[in-house]
Image: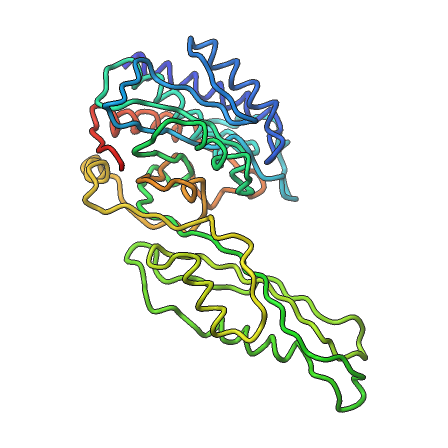
Length: 358
């Protein structure tokens, strides 16, 4: 018990220091440097690629499955409306304000200190902790790069603010750029082909269409037009109208399958920016899910994206905080959430068994 209490207070103090260091996506060097120094002070050797930092437990056994504990170092830029200094850890009672406190600093420090505690005992699995970068922008030098450096992984705990409830599925993301083409003409005469009107037909199809396969945990695929641009001046019929579709996929469809459906049904030219941010999910029967349920945790499907999208092996998203606080002014975490998270991670994972993932 004393070890857990010390880990809880150490984690809170570490988070205060991390908040004080700006760590916008692709600008995480200083915070990664600090974290490396901190981990070394705890007696561990660190590994690093660009701004991703990871450590391994002692006595890695290739015959055992390997568990990854992961959360991210980077933050979005502060929105307008902050009444606290975003880059200064401000404690008011038991509430800690600061950019990245909730998303995902609390998960990061909680998982790190859970790693320290779990590593003190012999487990039936190998243990790796990784702090990844560029999560908020799904950057190429974040988790995607980190996975090329890590050994074979069989399961992952991804720390994001879920109120320490188990996200057993996560929606994927595909951004699709569309262009409707017409023919220019003078707006005063009945000439030309208005690209806006052509785009409207496609936008209405997107608005009114629901793909038939519905996930029990994630619901239907969500397709939303989020940007539209057309025209050069008021008296010219626009010959081009571009719009963007934000597609949140469920595990029933691959991003490529959804793209093919759009390509067939839309008159506009369509181009996906990437297929790489996939949906994921694990069955309710997974042993760690069953243990979480026994501990009083609930399950849900997460609509928000995380580094889980890059993990092509089973994973569970769970962490302290509330997703509704993320990317908002005066972001905060309550200290009891960190204390409870460390205790819950240890209770969930200590003595847990994992299967090797082929």
